[in-house]
Image (cartoon, rainbow, N blue to C red; front, top):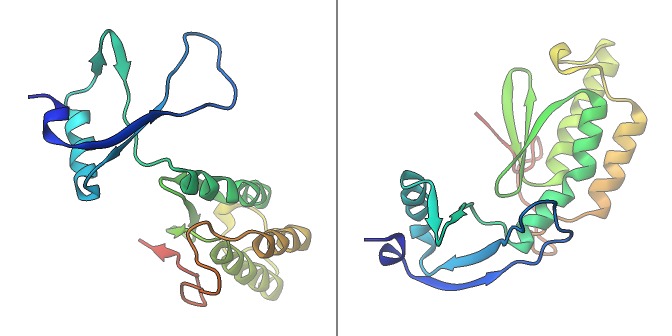
Length: 178
């Protein structure tokens, strides 16, 4: 029994890449599974049977990487550069979230405004106490970094949000902590 016997693929088509990389040509394809609830099981079965080889070509499977997810990733690019400047530890998480480490806790953000709120809170605390709240993460961001982040959050909108609706709590937006 193959993987195709377990799940119904609704459609599949090639994805055009921006610029080719050197070496043998990669042919990325997108396949849509009919029932979304089967996706995790599909990926689990595929990883169990790794490596998948079809007609002497190795096939790699990844989670959703739709256009909306790509826009989510690119919306965090400038923010990640600012976090690097501020000395914050961070990572990009699939599908389109930003993970930041602050005061030995992990914070997950899916909107830019949540990152802005946390940085503003740290800037205010650093001005009151004369230092950055979490020294292991680096020096306090300068006002110019905060102003630039403010500009970014007002000019960009989260790709999954509907106009006129806001999500999250005032403290951390829709970010959560572990």
